[in-house]
Length: 182
Image (cartoon, rainbow, N blue to C red; front, side, top):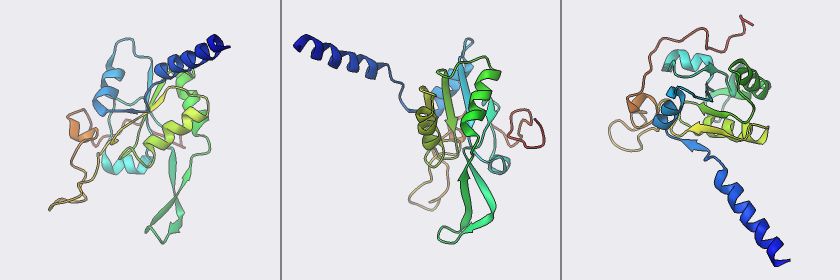
C-alpha cells in the first residue's frame, strides 16, 4: 500500500513538472514563434478596433478576440462599453490550430493589451476547454501602466511594444478578425 501511495505521489509530481507555466514574457513568446520548427499558435486576443488604434505585431498568427466590445451597452460604473466573451472563441482557436496543422495540445500563446484582463483569462479559459498548453504574454502588448510620477498611467514599461520587439500601426488584414471575410 505504501508503494502504491508513493508511486501516486511521485506520478503527480512528474505530471506537475511537465505542466507548462501559464505566463510567458514577450521576449520568450517572440523566440518561440521565431523557431524554425515552431509548433506554436500566437494569438492576439484584443478587439480589432483596439488593435487598429494601439498597434499590431505581424509575429502573431491570428487575431481572435476573447472579449468583444458591445457598442450598444454602456457600463456606467467603469465609464466604458460593456464587454462580452466571444462565444466562438474556443472553436476559432481550434480552427486556427487546424489551419496551421497543429493539434489541440500544441502551445497556444495569447496576448492582449496588458496581460491581465484578457491575456491570462483567455489562456485559463483555453486550458479549461481542452487546450492544455495555453499561455499568455505577461504585460501584454502595451505593458503595465506606470503607477507614479509625471507619466503615471502611461504604458511605457515592459510589454511587447516596450521590449524592442517588432510592431507597427499597420495591421495585416489576412491575420485580423473580420466578419466580412470567411
